Length: 184
Image 1 (cartoon, rainbow, N blue to C red):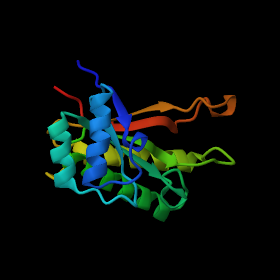
Image 2: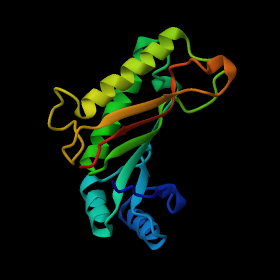
Image 3: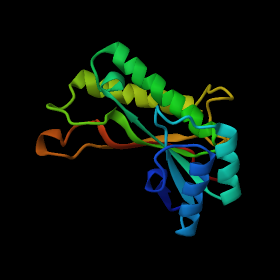
Image 4: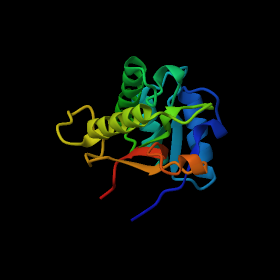
């Protein structure tokens, strides 16, 4: 199994367009990386055909990086907030697939930010359920043609339990989660 080594596009650029995409990809390649992590920021208009073409030209694999906000926190007890987070993640999985990528990473298990208290049991259940549904959408049973990653392989969702403090040891909220497409 080949493991690629990647770097975040924000090392080189602060916005996305053909010139910046090329600059980030040339920088990654020049430094010996074979993967580029592209942030799926709301302010970035990622042109799929151009980005995919440049990734292919530079021989780079692609990982999408997404984060959730207070308005899209899947550990929330508010069903509307959880649904918004799930939609955000499903959209991100679709974009990664459209770009030919094979991983979605980032803070996809909770909001990006500090919490005053650990998530509730309902919040942990909401998080696990949303991540399962997003992983199913990414390539599990019954996924449609636009929802699986471009390689055609079935992505998996992996998480590990939180271990930030003694009180969180038994938590089922992941501290690391990614939606990935295994390579064959």
